Length: 209
Image 1 (spheres, rainbow, N blue to C red):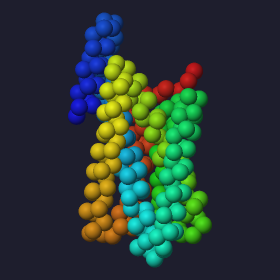
Image 2 (image 1 turned 60 degrees about the horizontal axis):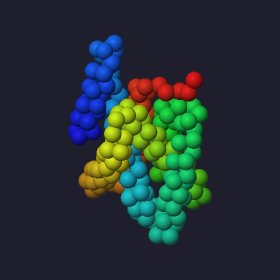
Image 3 (image 1 turned 135 degrees about the vertical axis):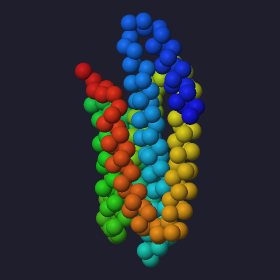
Image 4 (image 1 turned 180 degrees about the horizontal axis):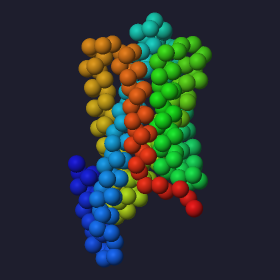
C-alpha cells in the first residue's frame, strides 16, 4: 500500500508537470506499478519457499540431510550468478523479456525438481536458481524506472516488500502442507511462476532500440 501510494503521488507530480500528456497516462503507469508488485510478490513467494522447503521435501522422501543440503546449495549459488546474468541480458534485450523468460523457466524447473532425484536434481537445481536470480535486479530497476523520483526510497520499499512477500508465502505454504502434504504443496507452487510470467506480459515494453 505504501508503494502504491508513493507511486500515485510521484506519477501525479510528473503528470501535472507535463501539460501535454495524455489523461490516461497516470492510470496506465499505476497499472504497471500494480502489475510489477504482483510479479515481485509471486517471485518472492517462490524464492523463500524453495529455500525453506526444498530440503524438507528431500528429507521426507528419505534422502540424507547432506544430500538435501547439497541440492539447496546447487540452487542458491547459481541464484547469485543469475542476478549478474539477468542484469546483463536486460541491458541487451530488455528487462521485460528477461522477466518473462526467467519467471516462466522457474515453473518447469521447480516441477521437475520436485519429481526427480539423484544427479538430475543437480541439473534442475542450478536452472531454478539461475531463473529466480535473473529476475531480482530486473524488478528493482523496473520499479525505479516507473517511479524515477526518490529511487532510494523506492529501492528500500521494493526490497522490504520482497522479504514480506516471501514470509507470507512460507507461512501459507506451511499451513497448506500440514493439510495436504509438503510435496503436493510445492508442486502446486510450480504454477505460480507461470502466473508471474503472464502478468509480466502486461508490463511496458522496454526493448533497446
